[in-house]
Length: 350
Image (cartoon, rainbow, N blue to C red; front, side, top):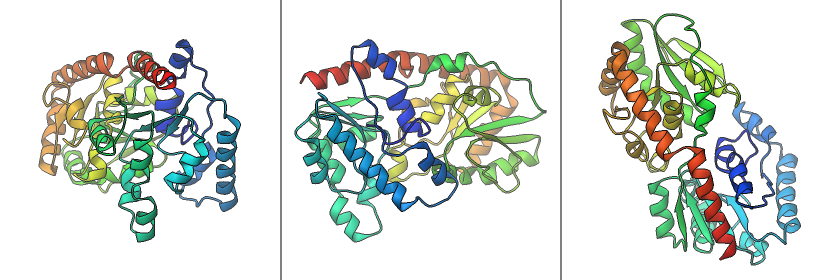
């Protein structure tokens, strides 16, 4: 039961993409997303959700829970029924074992909600669900620590997998102009982190040709920074990343950012690109400074590291090669997909 259909990155990468590996392991999976692609399209365009449509999503999810009573295991992304109490969800599971999957610090959305009634009703919802789950799957160490504190009975740390073959098949396009191309890929919810690079990128652009290549749903528009916007599509993603020189992932030092999984970095690495990242959370595990990428934690460091990569093609190639090797060894879907399948099969048997 993923939260989204294929347009939602977390659901696509952690639920839909591994399906072939689950089938190969003999698992029969019926997918029932809570939100459809139309919901995300409205969300990303800034349009409010239609109340009747939202009620329909709850009816559909309730129908899915009732219609799969013979299922040996419920595989759920984060929660089955958003904004409803844990006790209600567990009653609807009707005693069936379930597996929860988390790719970021979703629990903070309830525990840190600005409205006190929400915190009282839902502040510990996900912890309660984790404590009763047959298995909790988490994308990084910060989430593993949280799940252990919540009382998880069984825990699997499974990074969000990268289908390396998709990126290897994309060739580097002809350059559409001179200059240094700094790439970023993401959704509107994470685009705000790019504001930390406004000053460094503007300073670098003042000293020579530079383009910020943004791959997402809308341009970012940093003052003084030339930007090339590429609308995201699943099919076009590898080719878009093939056209950058360096990929960036700035993050603040906040509890929610500590729970981020660094997937952007893995995408850049899979595409054969050097990376620069804030040393926050899982970024520190993925990037070994000077080996698989570079760290930058303030504006001066961003100027220094990006300037070094702009001026040294050999450094870019060396970091890119090490990053690609890291993805092939530890993050490829061909490796993580069977691991997920084995864990779900074990949870169903247990």
